[in-house]
Structure formats: structure tokens, C-alpha cells
Length: 121
Image (cartoon, rainbow, N blue to C red; front, side, top):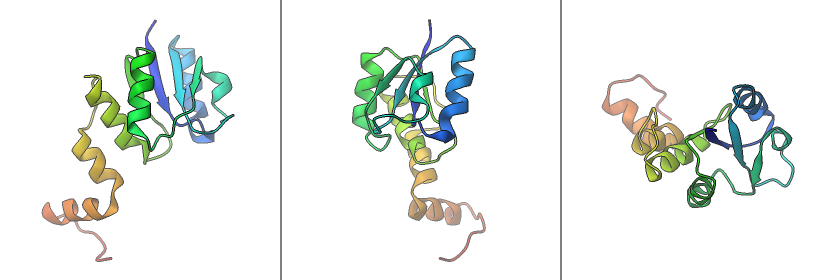
């Protein structure tokens, strides 16, 4: 059975957990809360912050995940990319791209470097 690591268990991730379970996947949830809404839908709940890539990498290794994702929130995108890179899992974006997508200062610098119009502040 394939196992996914879902980063975040808030209301924004409930539908993602439901979809993964409906596909017959084993779902490991990483969320720092004791009882996040998606926890009851997942097979395992690891109390780890989605802002703590090292803890999420440890959880991914411990549970032998085949993939990592998040849904409905942007900040865990960086952690997802770091977990994928650490475990040599496929990822649609690199760690560098994920960093630029989640760090507003570097995002703006990338926009300017590539001529993408953006607000000056």
C-alpha cells in the first residue's frame, strides 16, 4: 500500500485526506496540534510542525512514505520540497523554487529578475 505524508491537518486539508483515503492510500499526517480536524481521517498522526522540515523528514523516513504533499496552504510547500529532496521522492518544484514561493522577499526578487510586474512594496 502506498503511503503519503500530508503536511497539515486543518480544515484546509480535510478534503485532501478524504481523497487520499478514498484512493486506498495510507496517510500519515504531520501537524503540531493534538487533535487537528484531519487526524481522524488519517492512519497515523505525527505531532510535528509543518514548519519543521527535519521533524517531517524523520516522520517520512519512519513511516516509509512514497510521497509528500499539502493542500490549501502555502507555507508547508517548502517543507514538502525538502522532504521530497531528502527522500529522493518526485516533486513538482525544487527546494529553491519552494523557498521563493514561500518567502515574500525572495519571491519579489525573483519576479523582478524575470521581469514579472509586482508591487514595489
